[in-house]
Image (cartoon, helix red, strand yellow):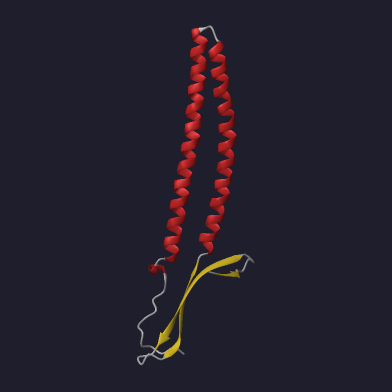
Length: 142
């Protein structure tokens, strides 16, 4: 793709395709070019990348203390004499494990959604239905 500046001074991403044009006798008469603006797809990908970085940080910040809670609950439960307290500590551990699973599931869904959105955006931006028709092969170019 080519890059150029848009009106706001940002980068424009283009997908360019060109082919030679020949007359009925096979002589070269020009070039037919088609361009697709991928700027929005490029911007979406940048936003998705920032979101993924944020999600990774949040995931780490949530999982780390939850692992600490699990370890402390196990340690306290192993030395606890009261059955009620051991049961409460097992519940704390169980809840922390469920929270870790929830964070992991949210991260997996975010990754699946991101991958599907990027594929859909690229597919729609480069599909032949979004490109203008070139017409027949016998017209003269001026």
